[in-house]
Length: 181
Image (cartoon, rainbow, N blue to C red; front, side):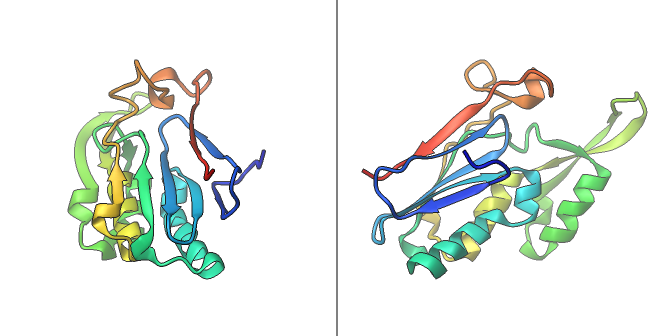
């Protein structure tokens, strides 16, 4: 059990790499040529810190992986349709990802809505899955090797856990595991 760890990488067989989430993006990564796996938890802060890039670069540096061989599966997570934030968080994404050329796809205005104190504020929808896909492609992964489940944890909260639906106090966790045998 590694607390405060958002990415695990190994080339050892029979080692299970597991992460948990309740809305965050989980990336299961495999290089079938070098036999290296990674399990990456990319919450919104991890996405801003570019943890997907960090993990891929570690696979390249430490295990001599070729990005064109790497396969990444994007697990169920909150999607743009429900990842609503206020202006300060939107600005963090805007500053960090304006150079992608896809900022209009990443960030969408969602109108004025009441915040938790009842005050009307601007709300924005953010596509952290798209950001992770862009980062993976920029690291050299082939588009056909990025496999997205397409499942929103909020839209499917009757099947999988969602912190946004279940509440910050009592939410359950989903587990994502990867292993080489």
